[in-house]
Length: 540
Ligand code: MN
Image (cartoon, rainbow, N blue to C red):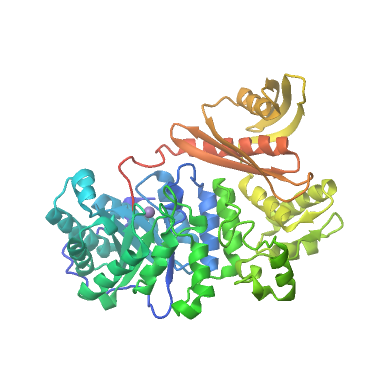
């Protein structure tokens, strides 16, 4: 990316009078920030390829605005926002910028590749943020908002402003900050509950107050950005909508700083199932929710809690006899939404070793995967291998297999070629491992405290590195002792955090491959010098 191929913004822009907020009628715009706020959760960093995959899926799902990252934060963030901007076809693509020209210019450089680019600029407005984070008085903050929103508008038609920590900002001063941003040309005003402090009535009152007091309120879109520290992110977001907000910032699986953000799947289904109450829809293709949830969970290694609304394993499970009896008589007795509305298939036992390529392709389509020929061939080979070892291949097995294929790239420097372990009651447990490193094969036998430890030790001896193990996690994809194990391994090196995954019916093989996957990601990250986040880039 070359900064000098874009011309500088015009110097004396009058307050731009035309606002370019997306037309809003009877629907709520869904603004996804999984790749920005979501990625700020410790350990949830995503690779470029993963972000492109998520970006495409969000676009297909009907998300209106995709916040793809914080371009000034690192080279990796910049590249990811640029690439997501290039591949997304329908949604607006947004980047985050602090209220300074450098951030905004860098943000524009990345988002300008989008069909509909948006710059999202923010500044802390609460007394605590003004005094301790910015060391600025009220007037200085207003001047900053005016100057930076105008600067952003000189680049982009579509600019969004956020007074960070809005819910703890003095109401009269909040009105001043919002009016300043609106006058400077921001078409969307986002009200962040940065610290997850608001309650629903308050969230609604703030939006109602702004709609009443802001000059030109009818020409702009009010947005809400809520955190779940008190478990009220979704409730606060919907309360804001009832008061007139028409954009909700949210994330897949509620990923995000601390307790996370409002969960996109919960917001979308609440608007859909309770359309009678809200009389507002969203553009979300809800049958893709399950797929998005699995993708984000697999990329980050963050499991979805079993009783999570909408996408949890148990969200549609009926255990009690009375409930099961009712369900058999009429699903409506105990079910307010249909599993297929969120992308859950009720078919379960599906494929076996005699299933052919055509049936496999059809199955993938049914599960929402559209693979190219090469990827399909790879997945089919692995499916046959799995079907040889496992009598019944379930939908979840196939999803794990496709996800697994997606996370291991062809240009990986390190590949696991052979593994045998000795384990049991007699110590020491040992692992005999063959790795292909940059095309050459290396073999080593190592011991450890258990077979997994032995495998990881063998990898470290064959490919010495400073990455420290931060997480090792195993989950069973389906029921049964022949179930595939899905393993996540998180490594940290010099502040860079990566998560690798792999699935296999052999838990130890899955563990070794997940570690190697994490290692390959770490090697890619090493080439990008900047750390994950600048320390002063606390964002809304
Ligand atoms: Mn946030």
